[in-house]
Image (cartoon, rainbow, N blue to C red; front, side, top):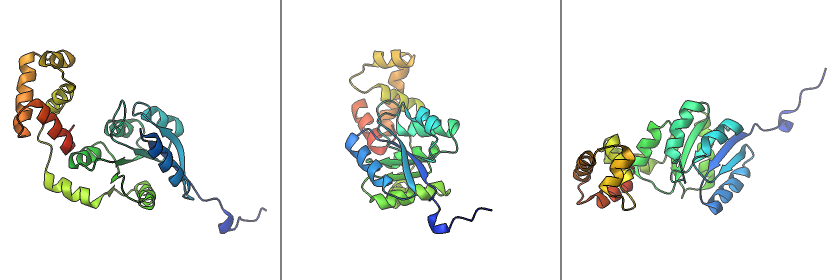
Length: 214
């Protein structure tokens, strides 16, 4: 009968981590630092949001560490899709933008954690372990800001129209993209401008982004 392996010689179970970050230097640095943790292993690194779901289904990470602002699919939209297609993968949002609206949207999308990038890597590593253990981990200052900010006043359709209005798009352009009449688009824009207490749609888009509603 084979002798039992002494506890000190047994391999440490490694947490498989997928990292999605569009800035190459940041992505490489995070992967390197996390890889130095004895119990963490970065199994995939991505620069775009469109590749997240397929990569998770392929590599089967325990935790997906996602930036919000990614080319293609945002980290928030990817989190919502992972909840449907890979519910065993825990999602931790890591972002430069500590906006209250982002936190609410992340939790609604099924994310288990939300941290800003200015924290130490030891804190991030601890958060990965905590979300894997079933906890929800949220930056305390951001949580307090989200509670004081209140919910997003914009409807889903108003958000959609504002998103389609960026980059100088005309009302006709927006109407064509969303298959709406121009008068309907104007009504949604007018409502969004009123709810954001701004003077025009450019300011409404800026305010909605600043709050994390878009």
